[in-house]
Amino acid sequence: MKISFWSVGKIHEPYIRAGVEDFTRRISRYYKVDWRLISAPKNAGMLSEMDLKKKEGEIILEWLCKDDYLVVLDERGKQLSSEGLATFIQARANESSKQVVFLIGGAFGVSDEVLKRSDFKWSLSQLVFPHQLVRLILAEQVYRACSILKNEKYHHK
Image (cartoon, rainbow, N blue to C red):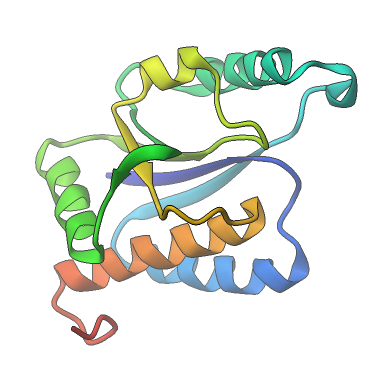
């Protein structure tokens, strides 16, 4: 199984990059893993919120394969504990999912079409975080879930 992290927005800020790279490297001991940063569409500043989400959604849907398991990070999604995320990832592996895509949408979220295509909507928290920080939190939590599955010492209860 491959884990892909997709994020709409700019490249990682230096203060985020080191942490994201570290946790991505750690995850790679368990699964193939990569990041795909989706640039904002041209003239994004001239587009309405709805048109911007639609354009971003078109790019996302074009890149997805029909067999990809899409997890959209959404504030209205289901919250999981770290152990719950571990169980979730193990279930995807047991189902022989080829690729699980964790998607961080743009500043205004994702289009309705992307939400309809999603297999799971996940809320990291009821708090709102900057997108750059969400990347780091996501990578760390996926690594934590992997370490839980292997009964390693990283996660302390």
